[in-house]
View 1 (cartoon, rainbow, N blue to C red):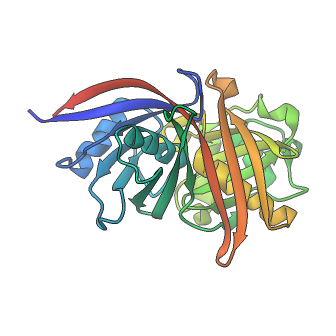
View 2: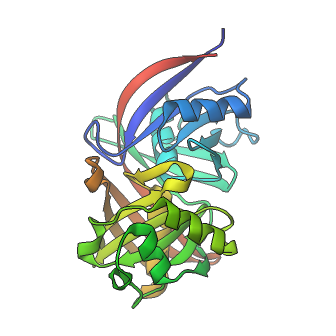
View 3: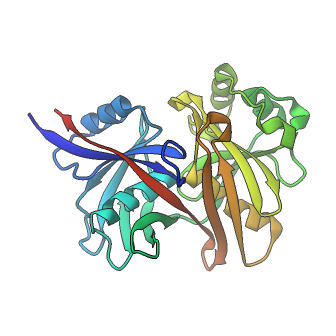
Amino acid sequence: MRRYAYETVDVFTETRFGGNQLAVFTDARGLSDAEMQSLAAEMNYSETTFVLPPADPANTARVRIFTRTHEMPFAGHPNVGTAFVLARHGRDSGGVLRFEEIAGLVTVKVASDATGEITGATIAAPQPLSTGVELPAEAIAACAGLKPEQVLTGRHKPVRASVGVFFVLAEVASEALARATPDLTAFRALRDATPGLEGRLSLFLYVRDGQSIRARMFAPISGTWEDPATGSASATLAALLLKLDGGDSASFTLTQGVEMGRPSLLKLTAKRGDDGIRATVGGSCVPVFRGEALL
C-alpha cells in the first residue's frame, strides 16, 4: 500500500472555514495522471494540487492543479495555498517560491507576521492579459438567471480573458449579484454555440465601486457550481480594469464567497510592462487538516 501525505488549507481568509478550500499533496512522486485526477475528485474541492520535483533545479517545484474533472494550466488560490503549505515546511528561498506549471513559471512571495509565522502569499500570474471572444449580454444573463439589462456593457461587453487561464468576465448591476443563480442548460447552450470558448465556460460576475470589487464565479459544467474565491479570475479582472481605465498601475480589493457563507478577501495589483499588462493576487491562509491517502 502506498501512502501520500496531504494538507488542507483555507485560502484568502484569516478565519478557518472561510475562504476557498484546497488540498495539497506535498510529495506526489509515483502518482499517475489518473490517480491525481481520482484523488482530486475524491477530495471534492474546487482544486487539488500535487507537488513534484522541478525540471529546473533553480525552481522550487513542479505543481499540477486538478479540478474535480480536469487538469488546469494555472489557478490562483491553489498557488497561494500551495506556497503557504510549502513555506511552512521551509521550502521557500528567502520568502520566494517558483512553481513550474502548464501556463508557465509562477513566482510566489510569502507573507509573514511580526513573529515570522507564515500567513499567506502573493502570486504573479504567468502570462500578460489576453482577451478573446465577446459574448452577448442576453446569453450571459440567461446563464446567471438575470435580466439582460442587469448585465452592464457600458465599460465592456462580457469578454473571455486570461492571465494564465480563461474566464468570461461580466459586470452586473449591484442588486443583481446576490440574485445570480447558474442555469446549467444555458451554460451548455452558450458553450456549444460559441467555438471561441474552446469547450469551457467559467463565468466571473462582478460589481465595482472604485477600487473595491464584489464578485461571484460559476463553472457548473466543470463541477464547480460556485467558487468562494477565484484568484486567477480576480487577477484577470484587475488587468482588464487597468486596460480600460488607463494608467501604469492599479490596485484593488475583491470580496467573494459571501453568498456561500465562505467570505474571501483578495488583494490585487495590475501593472503595464513591456509585454503587456501583468497582474498579481494575494491573501491570507489558514491550515485546517492533515492526512494520508492510501493507494
